[in-house]
Length: 561
Image (cartoon, rainbow, N blue to C red):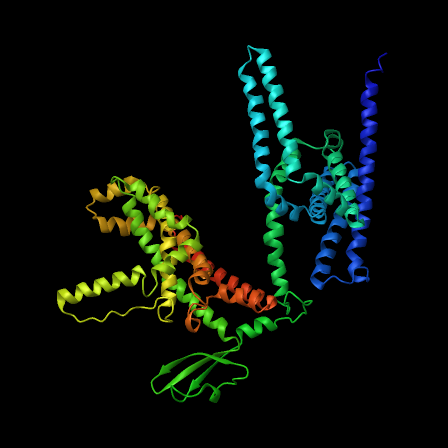
């Protein structure tokens, strides 16, 4: 009689032991399959894979095989590390199989088809929601059970009818049949099977008996729960950011054109970009072919020094023009969007009435769509009917009447003159960024202790002295952040140029920027390998500028001590 209560616990322990053995065998089987898959691209089983695809497949499956075999041994030895590794691998396998099932089943294209018929079926969906509201309304009649039961039944019926009609109107049955037909092929069956197997393995290892048998502690459970909730963002980062980043680094060493298989060319792309020459000129107007090999180099620019000069040539002339334009844009746009923002923040930080309203007004351009802003400014810059030239004309006329100056209206061609095209883009970017920078400076100003200003007033300091000796030093962290982010944004300018200018390069390539040149190389000329090299050089330039700002901030920060 005394042994009877222990029998259920003994049976549960035996079942759990069987489950753990099965999970250990699954890890062993998966490790062997993953190892075989890792070598398959190199033994002719998958001959159609490109080099980078084969390398990626081998690395992922090889690492999975090693981890899976480790987990199998740890499960046998009842180590919690085996549970952690198993959950990690099975979760990734479940996600991969699920995405593959959606792709093979045509679910992504089916969503587009649903969008086409959603208009005629949305009323039934609203009816189902109305049924839910009717059912929920029954909770307000706790003292009258008959009415509550009636409302719940009516709500359930309305929800059922509305949901069924929504499925019929949205061609759910037809879509389900198409999904089943698409998944009936060997690949679909394999991924559906993988989805089920990975799901069962994940469920079996996550259960409390498995966790207890593998010596799971509270800290382990909290860690796994944290990674589980973090996984959607983490997977998105790895798949859509880190993965393409590493892939572009590989492509930068190839001649990829997005059509033919890429061929390894080593540093040829970087060599062409950075291949430059500087030659002296006997006279300022000496022909370029007299001093450089015009079959290799193109003239980028020349500098006159007295009766002679210096010629700068490059194998890729457009890259250096784009770099010059981008640096010129950053040098002018950053101060124009930082200095006025600092002054404006000081004004908005005052206690004058209406300051909250103006804070919102100045911030609006930062959240407005760049496409809309660029189109509005394109109309404002119109040489004939644009308001910019209109106000310039009116100002000149007033000046001529008052002072008899005789100034001629220049009729500036803002976007079609190479002398003003880049300036027109700079004004737009500075105007749009200034509001956001103002808010950042305003936040920094509100964190400065008021006692500092009071003490300075007692010492006889004026408004200018307070601004120079208190405000600016105390705003050092905010200033560093604003300048760094604004510089990075300026070095990546693209949207304003692409929308405002026609063609985007502007007259005589005056608005050709690095990102625009990268875009043209990749999607117009289909030189993905060369464009990837351009992207990494741009990254190095931005990283270098940011590093310089970090070093300067570290040396000058008032918070260093």
